[in-house]
Length: 316
Image (cartoon, rainbow, N blue to C red; front, side, top):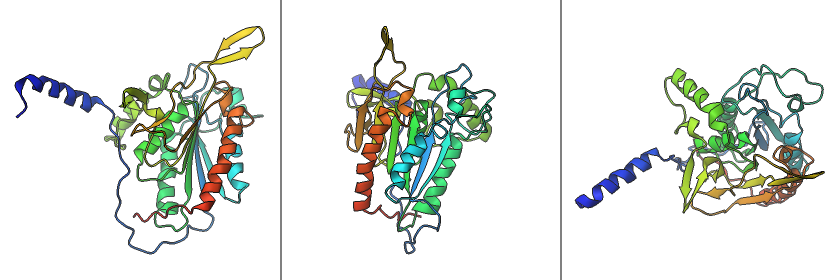
């Protein structure tokens, strides 16, 4: 029996554990009962799911839009795979819980010639695509589709939550472009809580509205968007520079990602981090230094993929 003097300490530790974010480890699934089969005709070798960041406005998240697709960022990443003979399917979403129609949007985020923001997909729609890919193109397939999650700024919070919510789905590659938590909960917490309340139950294995909470890894606390989960094979992380040199002096670059990503076991296995000279916005530009680095790493990634066939998913 625990001595009386230690019981208050135990109670405190249990309380703190109850408040800490919980993690879902990659589940061990029963073996698939039938023979492995090829993917359906027309299904892609690579599926890129991209989530953009916050608009530079006071009306987020309703006016957040997918800018990684019209900006050409997703196309630049897809082109690296296509150049090696891989077929690619891509989808982009805004930094928002679900589909929505922006009331106004920043012209520079809409793409050339677009003056009115089209309907936008959000996290829920990207989650549905991920689940469908797992069901139709990965489980029981001899040549499973590889999943790539690509995100910028607030979008990184969403993609890390997506990987965390589905430990059963193998993520071949996660690309984080200057992930930021600043103002994420201010924008999204109430929206997510209201959504769960309307559903009558939480559809996720954790509190999604708490996706910018921190967790202790070793002796350091990390935001959840800095944690790379066991189902992610490789994470390519780009951080923007701390200061921007401009004519006449120095101008601060804000916000920026200051923490290098880490695994839950405290290691950096399968994580590559690059400090770019780009600003926070420019790390997502297809011709910027950050994307040059990403595309160079992709050449190595694809070579590795081609030397080792993807693991067949023998799970129902």
